[in-house]
Length: 474
Image (cartoon, one colour):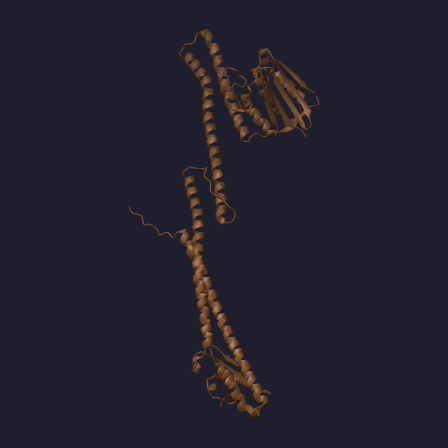
């Protein structure tokens, strides 16, 4: 099936024709206005010249009425040399002398009424009605004490003025053509630049749509296209960061599933084996109780694994609410010592508490117990025939808690990894009921951060480990 193609009007042509049309229209309007202004200026100057001659004739006639013929001849010669003419008429519009030129009676009644009232009459442009084209027509009345006696009608051809206007129009035409050429080149050049910049944005957008989130375009702030390029680069950075976050979350999801599956496989396999053995009477009677205890032990391991994962996710998603209060640190450390004493004695370890009675810590009681038990259990797990110190002190506005052991220690290259989820499951597969899933230290770190505290670890392989926790106390 064929699809009709829609005609496209490229942006470069849109810009080009837009610039050219604006410049042409602007020059045409300027030419028309300028020509009209020059024409009016020429006609006004011509009219003022005729009026001045008319006033001079009337003035001279008043001063020397006996020499009227001499005055008329004198002005006739002067005006003829300037290609002008004049005619005298009385109050009835009858020519008195020099009857050449347009007839005064061809004036409209309204115009004649204005003349009889003493107003000077100027008639530009409309010359055909007087039978003489290209003439400036001026009527200068003579009024004395409110009485109209007649006047002077003066005319002047405008052929010279028309030629001047034609010359001006010719120069304006040349100017328009030159401006058109310059505008053509400038518009073409600017349009090409803008189109090239837009094309780069389009190509970059195509690369992004294909999955390339590292593309960049040259940006600037001097125009909207440059700002668009800045926004595009910012958008690509956001998309790239989002994709990296998505990839990181996906990797964590896969790692989480792998770790949980791995941790659950051993207890589930044990439980399944014991149940099948009991079901099929494959376990001797004297071993059944031990098998049932093993199933119970492994079931508790699974429950702890699920609870620790749920606890970890609640902490990460800020679903845990802390109820901070001032707590005597010595009392808390002694509770930890008492709760974990039996576990420490199983590995022939000693737990020592060192804290002054006045040392206080501002924290959530239950979560503080959880933090200290997890770290202390970790020390018990990797210490045999050694000592574990639980210390507390005040330093400026901080409460410092230290848990130090003389255990196996951690290699300096592995210290940062201990905060990773399931890290301990990777390095130790012993059936230890305390923190064997590697979630304990991850939870500890998250809980300390929720308290706006800090935690660090110092360790050396074979020489023990020290955890240092700082809680702000104000």
